Image 1: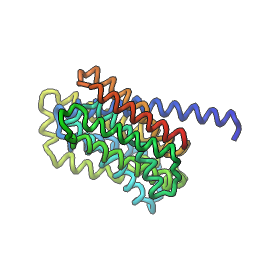
Image 2: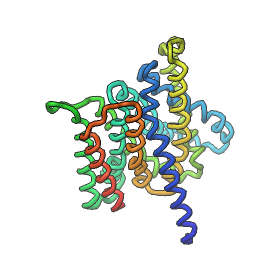
Image 3: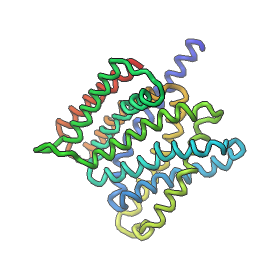
Image 4: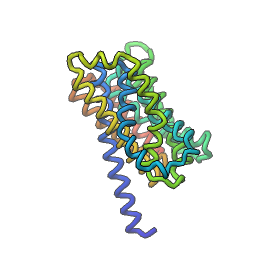
Length: 295
């Protein structure tokens, strides 16, 4: 590969990183706004179902290309990287500020590295190990922030669980879905075809339709649909493309910027952001930096 091609690929990768950070960094405030009217399970399922609807025509157009023998791979990636985290983040959003969710989301590269080392034979250097330790110290600070005595915010742990699933999903995607001869758009459409119907059943078996008559329902619905189309559908296409272009750990480094965007939205929405939050986020990002410096 020529130097010009390498530089071009690197520039595209950085552009995708920044764009994804803006989209995903804004997703936490969208969850919060949608929760003003809808339940956590409805926000999560609306997010996935909206993305599913977006992908239906793309999936049908590419039907002849689809390797149906790999359906279980698409289902695993869909559940780990989209369905379960969507519900976890929505439930966490009922008791956790959006800025803090965004900050905790930055533990994703740490889990990506740990899972890669434990189950995918990826080598972890001493510097990366220090980064992992620092990252989890920062996460612990966010979980305990604002407490007069030591107590754990269980809703913060839901975000940690979601990032663990992201880490598993990133390694699985890199190993099993990047070399099957499909572009990221088709791959992502296949993923959402496996989980979209499930989210639709969850959504429409609830009182979702009844809630549409409440005050503020239309904006809340708009936030949820935007969350699905931009935050799950289009962003996942870009992210899967980024994984194909780079390593799973580097791709997960979008979380460098996500907390910054989430914190800005949180501040604009008058959320109480403490010094412990800034300190914890900074420690996490130093850990993520060490992880990627050795990758």
